[in-house]
Amino acid sequence: MSERPWVGRVQRNLLAGVLTLIPLLITWFVFTFVLRQLSAMGSPGVRVLARALEPYAPGATDLLLHPWFAALVAIVVTLGGLYLLGWAATHVIGGRLIAMFDAMMHRIPLVHTIYGGTKKLLAVLQQKPDQVQRVVLIEFPSPEMKTVGLVTRVFTDASTGRQVAAVYVPTTPNPTSGYLEIVPVEKLVSTDWTMDQAMTFIISGGAVAPEQIHYTHSSAPLKRSATGGE
Image: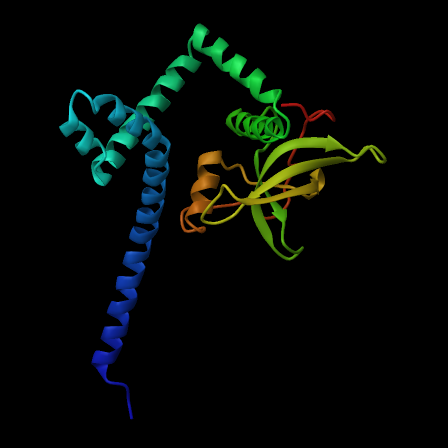
C-alpha cells in the first residue's frame, strides 16, 4: 500500500518546524543563561539597596524585592558595574587600582593559579599574533579527523629542539569548555580564519563558515622564534 500524500506533507512540515525552532531555542537558552548570570551578580547589591531604603521608603523596598523587578534591577546594576570597571581600566587611576587588585590576587594560594592563568589566556587570545596563524586545524580525536583549534603558545622540545604548540580545542556549542592539546608545529594546518570566524563556526556547529578552508598542508603553519613568546 502506497504512502498517503498527506503523511509526507505532515512529516516535511514537522521537520521544517523543528529546524526553525532549534535556532530559536538555542538563542533563548544562551540569552537566558547570560541574563541569569547578570542577575545573580547584581542581586547582592539590590538586597543591600533594598535594606538601605527600607526605613525611608518601604514601598520601594517591597518593589525592589519583587522577583522580576529585582532581577531587572540586578541586570542593570551589573551592566553598570561592568561599564564602570571598563571605564576605570582605561584610566590611569583605575588601571593602578586594578594592578593592585591583581597583585593581591597573585598572593592568594591556589587562587592566583586560576586567576592568573585565565587572565593570561584571555590576553593571548585578544592579541593579534605576530607571524602566527592563531586558528588552525589539528588531527583530533584521530589522525583521520580534524578539528578547529586555537594556538596559545609555541614551545621547544628540550630533548630534540622540535617546536610544539599548545592548542586549545573549544567544544560545540559552548566554546568555554574544551581540550588542551600539545601538537608538533609541522602537524598544524593554517586556516587563515579570524577569531570571530572560528568562534562563529564552533558555536553554529559548522553551519556558518567561510566558503573555503585549508584542510591539507599547503605551507608551514607557523614561523616564529623558538621561545614562542607573544
